[in-house]
Image (cartoon, rainbow, N blue to C red; front, side, top):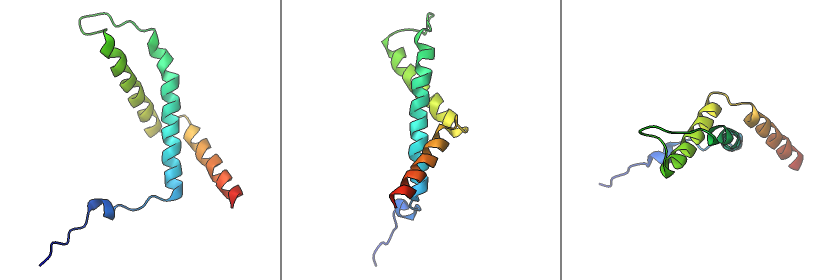
Length: 95
């Protein structure tokens, strides 16, 4: 008797091209928002018993990226919607 097990990855539905476009547009929006948020944190001082140091700059960038991704998950600023719409228009013109 053979062990026939199906990989969970095979059970996942294949994303549609529009879903992949949306995913790409949301990643772009998150990257854009992270770049816009970065200057807001550059001038902050982090004095205190747990602040400062070289590692804080690294962790701050992770925090900014997480804030940007959460903003997109919460609806974003509309950039992803515009990017998807433009990508669909370009796809229609190519056909």
